[in-house]
Length: 77
Image (tube, rainbow, N blue to C red; front, side, top):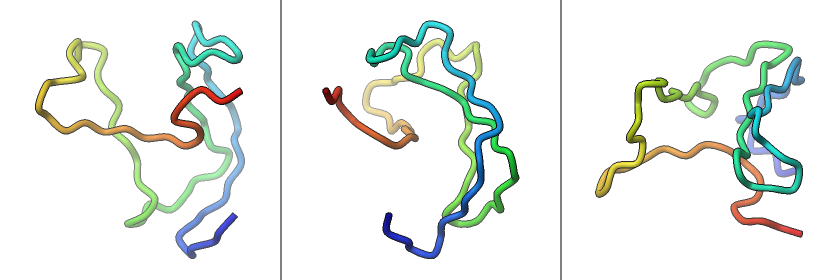
């Protein structure tokens, strides 16, 4: 792993998988991670705003959106 000097390391205390997620499938491929130790918020480490339950239309034509995550952007066998 390439160190840039902006990284912070902590452990995961708990993983919350979507109740409909299935191993090897991309449907419902989302989870929340509760960190064991806090991280310091900086210009490089930030929180993300999650949508409200009432937000029915999250994707709006001709508008910018926000995607966060890591890993694969397509299914890899």
